[in-house]
Structures are given as structure tokens and as C-alpha cells.
Image (cartoon, rainbow, N blue to C red; front, side, top):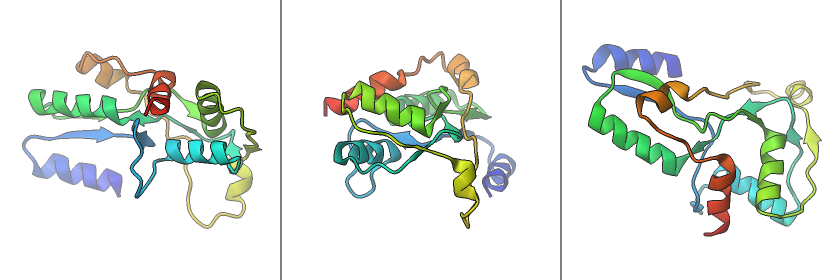
Amino acid sequence: TKALAEQAVKQECDSWTIFRIDQPFRSDVYEKKPDTTHKIIQGLKQKTLYPQFTDHWFSPTVIEDFSQVVDWAVENKPNDIFHATCGVKVSDYEYAAMINDVLQLDAPIQQGSLAEYLKTATRPYQRNTALDSSKLSSAANMRWTSLEDAIRKISSN
């Protein structure tokens, strides 16, 4: 459905820009619907974090960076598709370990397997949603906040 929506936008609009994002998070938490990063932090703090997949990869999107990208697109009006993520490929387990380390939570993290989960799952689940944002970085002359620095900003809120 995403591909169909992108095709419709390209066909029907004279001016368009499409951004693909992955696991967006921001430094403050939106209480009504916490993002994945804040859910991981909560699980680590409460020592209730479910096992984290070692065989699933993604590239988080830092919302504070993404807002700058939207400003750039409004100003420059590129008719193009861009991946708008931090550009770093991490597994769920690696990401939880990074959060644990940066925030010095010292919580246990169990390894999990997406392959094993998929044997019992009833919904589809992509193994790799990591996106390369180098095209956008070059076009917008942008440097992304490192994941570690973005996580540090969470701790200061």
C-alpha cells in the first residue's frame, strides 16, 4: 500500500516530496503513545523489557532531525523520494544495549530471534527496514545527530 500511495502522489501532484522514515523517536515522550525508543527505556528501567531480536534491523529516525529535513523540503521543493533516518543499521538488541549503555541503566537485556517469533506470528514482519539516508544527506547538505547523542538528549529531559 505504501508503494501504491507513493505512485499516486507522483502521478497526481505537480510538486511532491516523499520521505520514508523508520522507528521515529523524539527527545521528549508523547504520553498518549510512546515511541519504540521510550518503550525500550521504560522496559529497561522497570526490568521488564521483552527479548530483543538479534536478527531484525532498522534505522531510527530522530524527529528533531526530521523537522529540519521537512523545512529543507518546503524551501527547496524537490520532486524525489528520500530515506529520512539516522542511516545507522542496528538490530533491536544492539539498539536496546546502546540505550542501556548511554543512559547507564544497567538493566538485563535478553536476546530474541525474529526467525523463531515468525514461526508463531500471524502478521507479516520485515526482517530489515534499515534505510540508507546518504542521498538525502547529500541533497540537503545535512549531518544527522548520532544515535548516542539523540539518546543522551532523552536523558536530559
